[in-house]
Image (tube, rainbow, N blue to C red; front, side, top):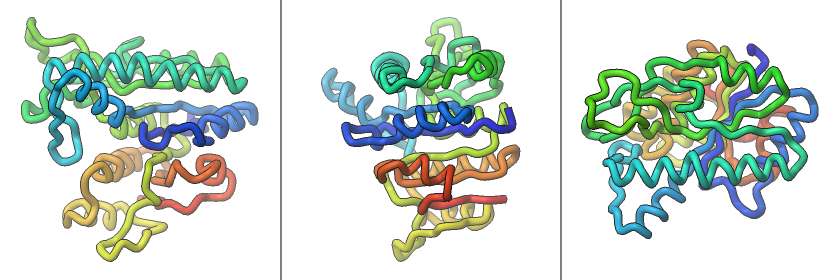
Amino acid sequence: MDKVIVVKIGGATLGSHDTTLEDVVHLQRQGRLLVVVHGGGKLITEWLARHGIVTQFVRGERVTDRPTLEVAVAVLAGLVNKEIVAALNNLGGRAIGISGADGALMRCRLENVELGYVGMVEEVNTALLETLLQTGYVPVVSPVGLYAFDRPPDAPQILNINGDLVASEIAVAIGAERLIFLTDVAGVRDQSGKLLPRLSSGEAEALVASGVASGGMIPKIKGCLRALTAVATTCIIDGRQPHALLHEIEEQGRGTTIYR
């Protein structure tokens, strides 16, 4: 498992001209072991709007009440996950879609009351991931998990989880070779807007603490920092660029690498 590459695909980077899934299939054919974790925040927001549900965010994370949770699970574990899996298989890859609830992959407790039904991962059961990888499949993981700790009797069984943190927890649990975040920006920037190609963990923490890194970049940086406890390389790259994933793995891309 120390040769596994964990790839987090942001929902905003997937589109009709995206090459990420082609890259995944290409790398799989080369014999690479990959786990794909996806988001879907943009599509969740669209479906919430269709149902007249107002979206709220706190520090870049969605507040998930019960109606929001129902939409999030349907979109993430259903629509988005199966579209990605279908696309990979149609491209000639071998992929199976799962959620953090399948095989008790992600066992969670409530992160905090302010965020509603959002999970904090307490345990990662890698058995299902290992089985899929060893039998030649790319696991495609949707970021929902089991509400397994301190759950009140009337609470839902499933919790929404930030996809960036799911990717980092999986990377740590399997001791992955690297963790790659594909997003819709070029990477991490300083206060003047200049792209920062390399950051130490201390420098990355300082950017979050000072507010220079904000919004959706915060959980990505936190995910990198978490992963660095077990993973050698973490990076945040622009998934909108043609074959960004392939370039990052084969010749190092142009995003931001965060190191210990």
